[in-house]
Length: 198
Image (cartoon, rainbow, N blue to C red; front, side):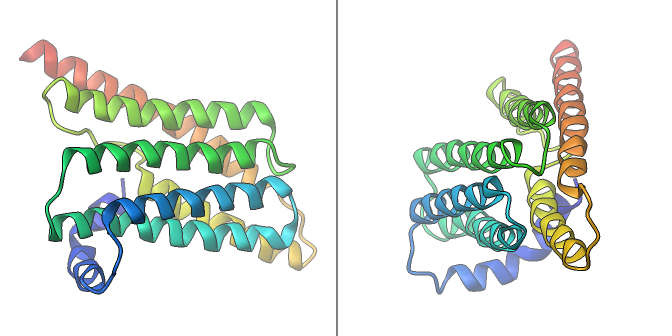
């Protein structure tokens, strides 16, 4: 949604960084997955101080996710690399959201609805591409979710450090459950209408 529109603005600085990275795109994709899994584990533990650790790990995971495609474009992008990147991104999403869903920060049923929405959002976008319509990026994108998953734990940590007990993490997951499922429906309808017209 918002962050997808910033991709073109970030392309040039990311290119400069990518030229100095001694890692392959696949290595960056795997590193991003490991960092996301670590973030999910931190959130699962339910300790206030680990909210910061989870947020930092997710920030670096997001950087890996942003850079792997740029590094690939500097060399020779492959379909295998693209497939690996998208598959590992889905596992990263699940690790993080399952960690939050099983933690004291969120009711399990809310987390399950959020996970369903995130996976169906991704599926609806890639399925549009599979039927020849191009990748669908409408609605709440992965970049937007990552931004919230970094910022909200930091805010919750800060409030709790001041003695303000809040359930921002659960409200974030409620937002994901609503917005991601709505995004999946939006992408499905857009693809359906395009196929009917074509």
